[in-house]
Amino acid sequence: MTPSNESVIAVLRQLVQYTKLEDGQSQSFRTRAYEKAIEVIAASSESVAGLSISELKKIDGIGDSTARKIVEFSANGTIGKVERLKKRFPPTMLDLMRIPGLGPKTVLLLQDRLGVVDVPGLTEAIEKHQLASLPGLGAKSEEKIAKAISLLGIHSNETRTPIAEAMDIARRVVAELEGVEGVLTAEYAGSLRRHAETIGDIDILVTAETDSPVTKRFVTLPGVTAVLGSGSTKASIVIDDQMQVDLRVVPEAAFGAALMYFTGSKAHNIALRKRALDRGLTLNEYSLSEIGSGTVVAASTEADIYHRLNLVWITPELREDTGEISAAESGSLPRPISVGDLRGDLHVHTDWSGDGRSTMVEMLDGAVLSGLDYIVITDHAENLAMNGLSRERMLEQRAVIEEMRPRYRPLTILHGAELNIAADGSIDYDAEFLADFDFGVASIHSHFDLSPVDQTDRLIAAIHNSAVNVIGHPSGRMIGRRPGVRFDSDAVFEAAASTGTALEINSHLHRLDLQASHLRRAVETSEVMFAISTDAHHTSAYSNANWGAAQARKGWVPLDRVINTLDTPTFLDWAGRKRNS
DNA sequence: GCCGTTTTCGGCCCGACTGTTTTCAGTCG
Image 1: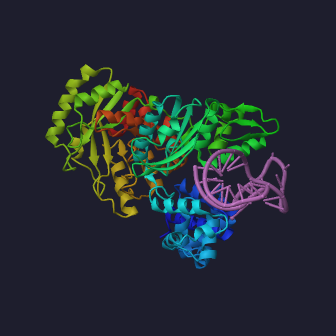
Image 2: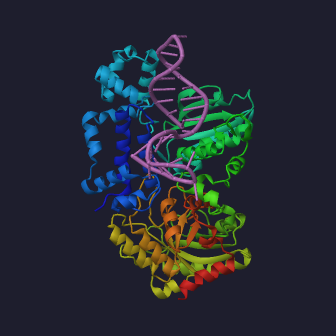
Image 3: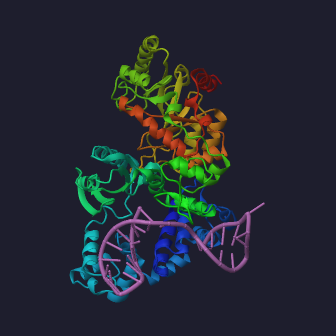
């Protein structure tokens, strides 16, 4: 079996770290090239290990050398260069490089002068005060490194937090900072603003009057468990013993440039700076300005800066340097979907299901408050033993919905169900009973350990069922908790497209399922349609539609591929076509 | 190591902070 992209990325990450030691610097052109290759593989849903050298070289960012290494890894499970470097540098030296503040130069120095090649050895050297004797290091460095070791595991760059947890912390911190006197705006930036699935550390950008005590307040926020650094315009903390949060304070006039800079990605920023140079301009976190005169040409808004680089504004979710800049230049970027484009919610629970927390009336009131034109009530069906509704209960619920309809006009209420896809691809009830629903969402809730071939067959069987309009959270993954089932995505996209079955973009931050790389692949290679749904179990979850829209943006999904952006009659026509076929 | 409507060779983004320094190296984002 060919190695997964994840295992290719893992070995390339090792290659990067060992090459840093070999080069004796953290940013050689070689390591940057490897890092770029890792980024493009991470963004790809195609399995790179199955490709030939010439096919790999066609991928932007992968050249001859990296292509050969990937092919070598596919064939042997190892890369010769990595194995050679492992003999020269013990693998424990990579542990040392994870300590914040320790780069390749210092790690090499430790090996050369003190024979220190692992964390216990370093701790011992610090206790004997041997570090201060090394060139370029002193008592303060020794102290700083000791502190970093004690915090290791909390804020080393290896630990990443699922977006759902990071978002909660970020919103809490932003709300606190907005209340500090002199603060004009506070926003989260970084990978969180790009809607990455996991977050390394949280970047918060603040504009404030010059005398604002914002950094002082920041380091004493409730939940702060360590202060890593603190100056007038910059501070870093660890919050809840869990996440590093970095604060930057900039003048209001530089807000756009700073927001772009701190949103990244690094690769996107580098590409934009090259583009600026081609135009006789230079871009930094303060402004876009002319190289000779230093005259500022744009700074206060992101849109101004993109426009001066002859680009349309690029939504943050796409800023990964994986084709968005050339698409922005040629006008072929999809118009970003916003929550306001969503006219219906096709996956909503009530307390009729065991896991629903709001009543039918509360959920319908919530739909009206959210400005929806239509909604599908999709409580769990009978096969989900803990939560599901029997036939009798389903019929009772249908009668209740019938009573509700006149009261809620012009909201259109559909009676559906969230059907459970069994291991063999079958679903609840029988064809006759299923035919009387208005709509069907079918989802995987168990048997996550079947082979990819079996999972593919299972999903395709459900897709071919005429009672199924949408496949809910298709992979079943829970970010940071459960890896989702593996399946032949191209085959599933094709089956869904040919049967008029939509694939869900589940809005819950724990799910965000389908994942962005699958969405982009599906958009590019098939005609499949999508449904952005909240899977709400409580009225408060309607607002999650924001995250579903962001996930669609990250997956390059255009508006006309999302069925719940259709007006009510067109949507009903779409849903009926499959059910009546 | 990657890349090319100025290039198959010669370039490759930009700045802050820290600690150790007499002018800068290392690290980080």
